[in-house]
Length: 204
Image (cartoon, rainbow, N blue to C red; front, top):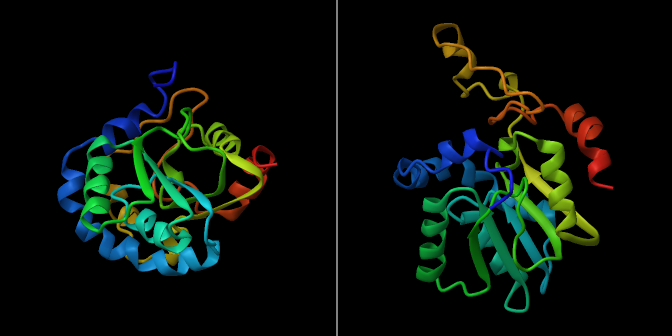
């Protein structure tokens, strides 16, 4: 574990709720719809070594493992112990041998198998409470010239299914993040200007 046990404390509690395992198959009906398009944009090649950040129950991780073939490998990292167990069981049942999963907070911790050729994340990188620190850590896991690709939600105006703005007037506002922390949640990287201007320097 990291020296700072409070790193991502809210998300550690959120994602280690056992209920995620029971609702994940239904959740994947939405999030899994982008997997093929996402992986196509990544352009994974035979033999590449890939890191999946926020791998959840492993759907995209396993799909990536099939693309890189037996000479490649994919390491899934997630903050949720129960989802990591679920992902391992899935890989075993589907007989995908070139994939591994570990309980890791990619904001501050390390993943076995570095350096990687590619870092990918399907709806995972929005949950860092210190995103600049997290992206710098991900960069350290890559080979020189390694590439990053991730899928994240666009603003609510382009996602009318998202109920957050509708219920916001009737629910208490979330508490402000502690000092030096950032808000976390599905829409925190919705604006490209936030990524390009705030985090680009950590990727070079």
